[in-house]
Length: 103
Figure 1 (tube, rainbow, N blue to C red):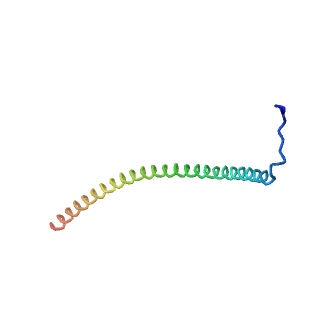
Figure 2 (figure 1 turned 90 degrees about the vertical axis):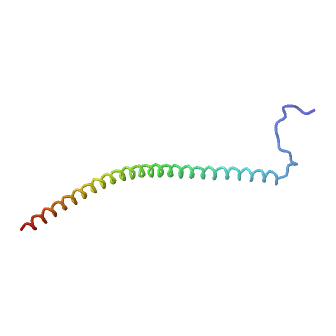
Figure 3 (figure 1 turned 135 degrees about the vertical axis):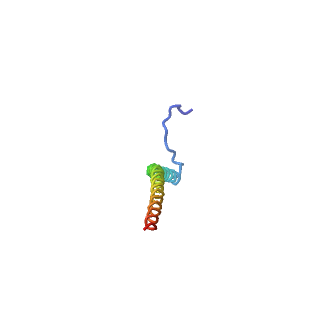
């Protein structure tokens, strides 16, 4: 009966092709994991960049909305001023016509 604490050893009946195939497969898995890690890193970097751009776009949109409100208010004031000026021009025109007709 063999000893229970027998050391591990490689049997000569294991073909070298099997050992070589396992080695190549192990190297392939390590290479695949390394390239996958690099791609994940690139994707994370791209995601961070897109997140920053999205934040910038949101800030620009808020600024544009605020500017739009300011421009609309200024336009309303300008239209009110134009309406007042038209009224003043009509009043001056009427006054001019009345003065011109008297003479």
